[in-house]
Length: 144
Image (cartoon, rainbow, N blue to C red; front, side, top):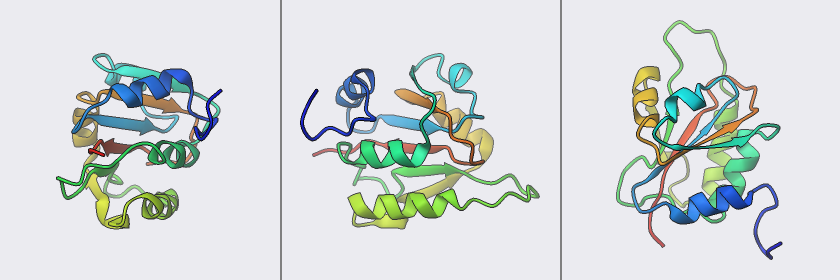
């Protein structure tokens, strides 16, 4: 046990966050995301039973977002014509605003297959049990 470390962050996840360098990307994936096939060249960390917002909040307590790019956070765009609502994105904006003064301005949106392509280049993918649709979020690490 360590003081000041959110309990939700496993030793494996802490190790990965520490190993990551400036510009490396981390995907926190919802339960529908093909984490294992996208993460063939990445570290895949299973966090089944946890949701994306609680992990995002814990990770951002330790993880600086890249200040040298306009959009260090990316979400998967809703496919045109898909009648899905994305209230979880409002939650992400609230969480991001707690840890980065740019708040929702840190967020970019990638078309579904562009998001998959970038995910294949990620350092790590966290597979969660999140049930919300379009809940995948990609973070680019900055410097301290």
